Length: 174
Image (cartoon, rainbow, N blue to C red; front, side):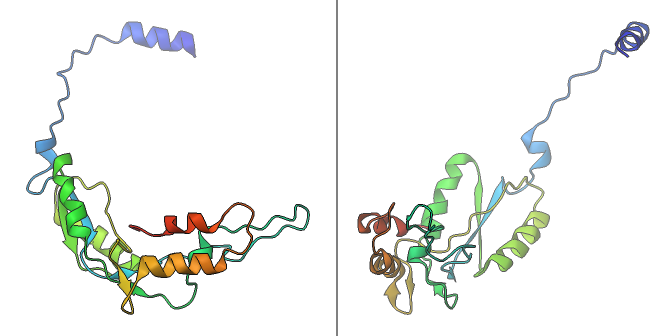
């Protein structure tokens, strides 16, 4: 096969092609790299942990958990107020991208809007930003960050790899 390749290579005449030049402007008319994001309330904890329970293997006697489930409210899916997204995404212009605010509240709505927005613009679209909460988010009139930190501290017990000083890490932008 190698010999055949060398023969073909020597028989075929030289191909002098013009260089292929790709320009961002040719494929991005109008908006420049639109990045959708949510502008309003969103589900506080949109996902589920596959193992929300405490893990305690008999062989080792350890106690630990996965997915931060120690601070999760596994019950009803609550909505968090999200008010700081416009401030956060305003920094996208420094990366030569444009923010595209959308009124979505769930993962499903976000997925549909991502598809729709990608068809509305000829510009390249590389993804989206959806915030489930920010530093000022509230649910039922209570600061969400305070709620999950308190849940963590009340469930911490005597886990082997976590203590109450780490509970503050569950607060923040999600």
